[in-house]
Image (cartoon, rainbow, N blue to C red; front, side, top):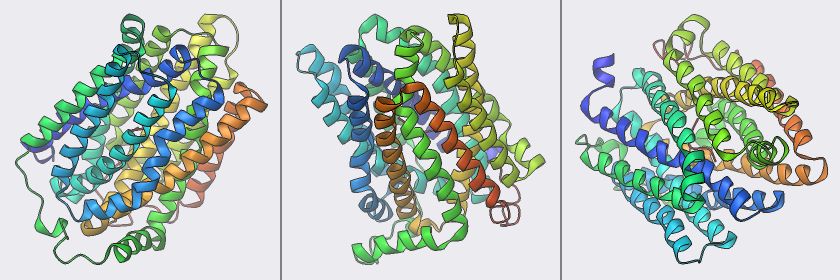
Length: 421
């Protein structure tokens, strides 16, 4: 299996995505630092920035899926990488010309949202053309390992770079990482089978959109997995508003300390991703998803419980990062593999984009709720509300245990982060 997984082209994909994730994770931490410390944003303004990172992608999401299913996915990914390099690179340039403000940041975030929607839809549809279906979970696990390594290094560097260079100049690293990703994609020699690109005999756009939605919403397996991911996305939206404001302004941890803590949290994801196959072989896919949901919920609970001297606060935040990230890694690898393995190649782009649209709507709902709750009940109680959302994910997963089982679905060898914000 390893000889197939680590063939030359897949190794190029691993390298490019690892570097790209490294840069994106620096920006993921640098953006809220920029908004909180440099632009002095309120919780409501923080919510608006988060919305700009999500809503534009929703608006183009379904159409993006149609484009993906009618275009060579690798070429589309290469184009969007170059586009994102230009967009994110504009932040340090505008800063140097004293033209950077909250409106500009929201505009760049909006355009990045659309480009990322296109890339993510293409990537999800491209991977099964590069990797055999019975190795998808292993491939996703390998990519998750790379993502975790990038998280450790990217988050660890983000706080240091923010202090040394300032928030705006830190984004130049992300711009460079997109260039590296584009070069790695260009270097891949494997070409997608003609069946994966359906532009020649494709149905009208509206019909194509309906096909993607019908596949997602009429397949009980895909729909239940989507429901789990969407509910989880509501939590991520809520925590995206409250989490760093709470750590920065309530717990008073500075950017360097935060960067180190978030980096160490990536070690939990790395460890789990490395043993995912063994975990699933022992517990089964459904039990693994349940365990992942429970672990993620326990991790979520630790942060709002944090109180006391700084060394205790560090323990709570560190525990949340390690435990919470580990649970989310199990969940996300499993859900990604279910979607890729149970969707036909010719509609996978549309299914993925529809999936992203629905989960992004969940994130927006959580973001709006997080901004409002933080202003009314405070950051700590808002994070406790997030724990309640995580409990709902557990209930959905337990209720689905008879339906979702990769072993019973004929994928006996499969086992199960990104992105984000």
